[in-house]
Image 1 (cartoon, rainbow, N blue to C red):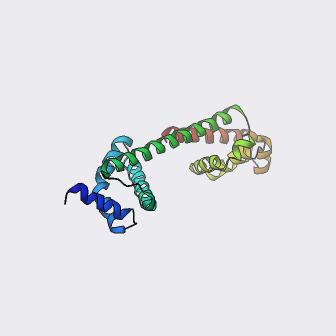
Image 2 (tube, rainbow, N blue to C red; image 1 turned 135 degrees about the vertical axis):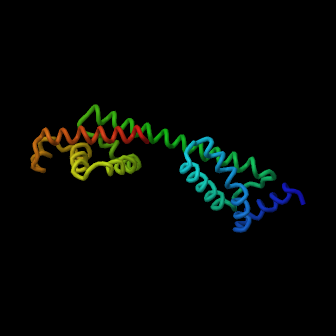
Image 3 (cartoon, one colour; image 1 turned 45 degrees about the vertical axis):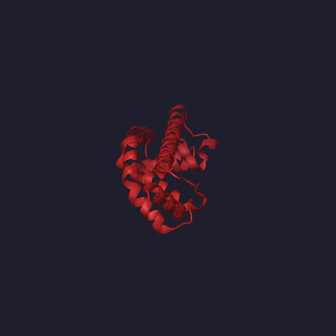
Length: 181
């Protein structure tokens, strides 16, 4: 039996959600697919993560996979599409974050429509964790809740200039973190 016939049988079994067929394909193609992803991404962890998601999708969608006679090109094309989608999503996220900081630079408060975008908030709020708790509190009070510097100073028992300094330092740290990402 030729290699192509053997792979066609394995693919047919995978389409029936056969775990052994999946394991055979995983073992055979993981390394070449990883090297391909790594060559494109130049980041080992990202390549591993994307490859894990790719194989996970392959398994979850096994019942709906098309009939394929040449598995290798199908897998590489699928992984390439997964990588391109990931890169596109990352670029969109970076644009959203950049837009967020442009707004921070231009105004004292964040527009309500921007902050009500839950996915956007979910991406920005975790970035605040790089800041000390007090800076997080000051930044959230001012930018997320629209509280004035003077009111924050009164509430926290600090001088208004101290609050301004904390806001400036917090924004600087967040910008630096975004550049590193």
